[in-house]
Image (cartoon, rainbow, N blue to C red):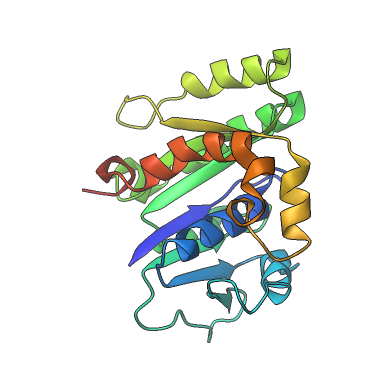
Length: 218
């Protein structure tokens, strides 16, 4: 079973949007997909409640309840972490993950917060032992803006505990298409292709990396 954790200790980085869209993408590829919502606000489960019956099914799991379980035969598990996930809570989620994706938005406040969180994450035992593969995504970017260039430079310079470069997988633009899709319980891959050509292009490097052996522990 493939497990992907979306995390960042700061709110407003687009974790839930990224998690929901990943779940939709894998479900549309015919994979039995589960979406675990660890946030007490339950935004990911609210999105699922809006999902039309004629779309590929995604099984929602309330991660705040210890009794909740992923259905047998699930191929892909996407985990949406809460803001301020630190310490023991962070360790517990990493224990269940093969891959961790960090969405980071281009602002000075977010970059500062990311630096502190990344320091803690790089000290986690499973990350040090390469039991979890970590990568970053520049999220909600304005294309060809100075802030985006600054974020790109920062993300390209990050290192893993073993000294290797941390993968910086893609930029995802600040697009109203995500809002329109979310309001209908859909992913970006499920609305009119004529509207989402550029968005889909930006998703392809992320999907390619997630499907590669580089994104999974050896």
